[in-house]
Length: 86
Image 1 (cartoon, rainbow, N blue to C red):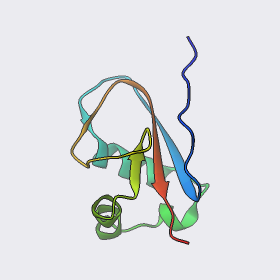
Image 2: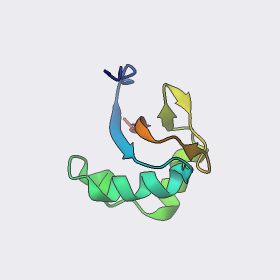
Image 3: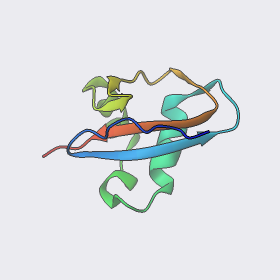
Image 4: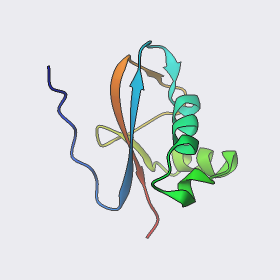
């Protein structure tokens, strides 16, 4: 089975979440994934306050729709796009 990736928005950074269990909250899983990646060092060093601001400014997207921090994530692959400031 092939998972189709949604189109990546312009000027964004994509994080792919691979979960074996559903029910985990997006904000906790995403913050961990941001800290673990090495492709965008500016995001890697983000503070919790700056991270929360990404959600309030609607810069976190799943399937090109605004994501809510306390949303449960399904198991499997989830593509999260973070809109970057220009």
